[in-house]
Length: 176
Image (cartoon, rainbow, N blue to C red):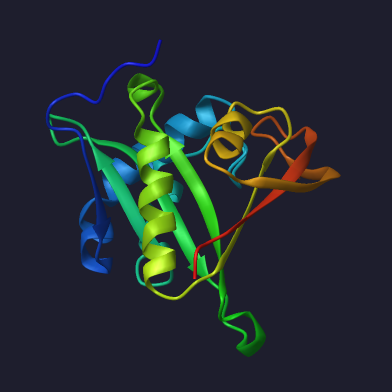
């Protein structure tokens, strides 16, 4: 049974300076994801300084939404990357959808994904893509949110332990 959002849970789009201001909390979130086995581009053990540097580099290069718990702690995040090519201005990529293990089951992943999708549509994007480790719990979230599996690539990325795993590519057409 899914827990309800706690009073005070909120999701907000962060300006680049806010990403930098919340880099420590975002870094702790990323470290938690890697420690929990999420294949999100990093190998374990992930040092907090490396995670914070990644978030600092993300500020201004991608749209970042963060979920905050009632105590103000970062409990989740998602990023949206825009394609920089002339023939791809209509599409974007959802990347690094993360929910802290202590905050799962409250609908934060769904809310973060919906916020990014709504923003993408409102800013003219008509196609979103993402990839996730095949067989991961995230696949249920994406399918439930109307994403379509486009295919699976074997040995696409290493999990945090360094083992190559397959990845499933997903897409979602947004209302124009």
